[in-house]
Image 1: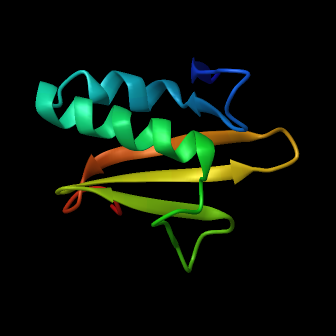
Image 2 (image 1 turned 180 degrees about the vertical axis):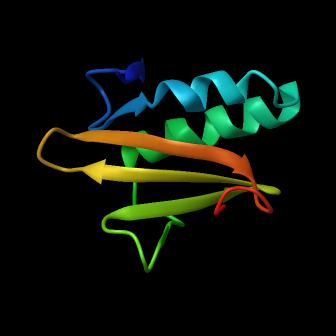
Length: 94
């Protein structure tokens, strides 16, 4: 089950999180959470900006937020960004 966090009729994409992402994010420092939130808000407008496609995974993208990475899948047919994982750069790909 996923959880919708960001939705606004003014931006094209909505953000949906896997429950495990929300659970893990509670352990991040507040400064990091603020930067992650700002990055996610910008992704709602253009999910491809400053994003890099992950080679081995189908339709999975990543963006950098300092030492943290956000992995997400873009579902253009539903106009949804599904956040798969947020973690430190040393842990996110494991």
